[in-house]
Length: 143
Image (cartoon, rainbow, N blue to C red; front, side, top):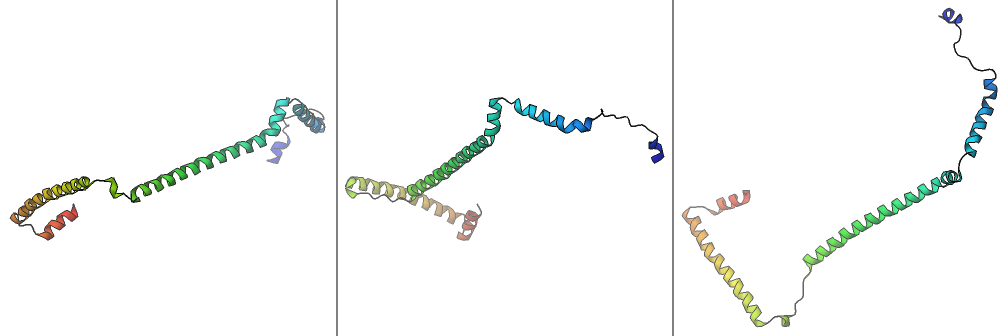
């Protein structure tokens, strides 16, 4: 295999003294590129890390603010609901007249009378259909 490649000529060529001048050519191109930057590009180049840090701090502060507001509102709403349901209002008896209390008692009595009438009908139905208490409780439990 080596004999086969010994006689072939390398198809690639490099100009004379190319590698001798290569470091100087690279250095010249780099210095030329850095001097061509405008003032605005230089400012952006130097200020980019600070701007990135500033935007990150603003984003962090915004996320923190939104999170705290959300948690606080939920806590405040829950506290308000607890107070609303658990609050016992103290009522001064002088705020209501005797007639008001009588009306409330009469309304309660009329409601209980209606349920008493219905209760008798239910009991009569259960006795007529021969439904015992355990059957009734089983049916109510499973539905």
